Image 1 (cartoon, rainbow, N blue to C red):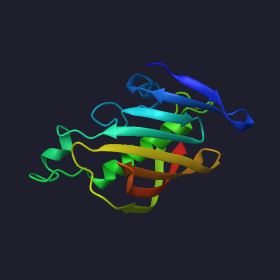
Image 2: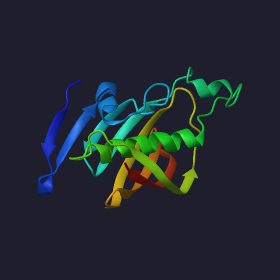
Image 3: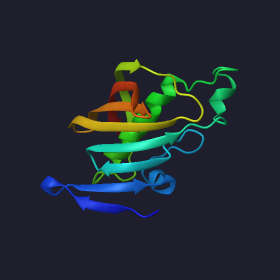
Length: 156
């Protein structure tokens, strides 16, 4: 996959388009628990925008719920956290580290996520002190908000 970069104000770098292979170089997650298919925009240490294509053959749909498949909210939160982890772990000096959950605050679910949906996952790191940080995360389907949360992480 081709990756393009551009300088932002302040000398920061924005990276566009990471595929599965590039995401796997940053995150330790693997199928079936890697819940981000592509990163569309990345500003290392600051924010990431990614996507998860929700397919009917996801393993959790067998039991959640038979006859009415719905992506579990906890997995939407996990997909958002993985997107935030790409943002934070792509920063200089973070290679090989892992971002762990510290807290999930103010999580709200506004719309069901079902097979065929394409989740747009956005996470912005709003504060960080040492190995602990907080990300503001939102997930959208076709421009409509389906989930938002504040995610606290620890890098180890």
